[in-house]
Image (tube, rainbow, N blue to C red; front, side):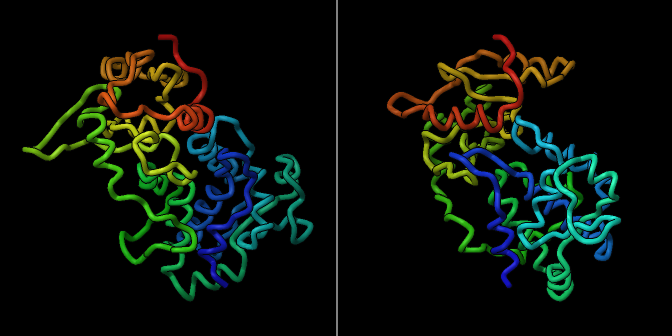
Length: 294
């Protein structure tokens, strides 16, 4: 059984690019807990808060209770649920999961495979990260679930991955003349730009193409905030700032809040700006809450 392929093919509610990372987040969390205690089970009432926090921070704006993936991940063959009544999930109701003492853990066959082949855990985690989240979030998401991954030994899984276009970064940075489209930062060390990145507007994991019409040149700070939904792109290519963002310092006001309503810097003449469908996807699937008034 190819467990990496199974992780890559989790059954999810899908429709025209909408994000549904609920099962991947639970599976990443479960892999982390297996790494810490290979025999332990996760009691729903004790992990509900952790799972809810992950869904709130790394899921789309439309909230879903953690009971949903806790129940439905069973159908993918990687997870099992037991209650005080015996094996099987009582359903997606939070009250039922709590009242019956429901616990979940990785399926017995998967636990055995992970013990036989320790590197399998890293390969499964990498494919979940690659398929559902942008690279800028991988490190902090591993920290959030408590997952320790090696830097090597987790090669690509060809059936689950598209090949990235390595020219993407250079094309986007050139189009925006090596400056952050939000703040104008253009730092270099000698002739080499530093702290500038090519951000996918529609995430590559959700069929976002490696082309300039799906890219923004952003500094490291604004790239992270863009991928976390603090910042977005509105009509007329003006910057959106989420009302959910709170920052009382002068730096937070200057570098984030003050961006609300500002026009994007670039791209240079002759280059098409971010395509409307990619911008709409980001607004609907990543941007958090409502935008602040300009």
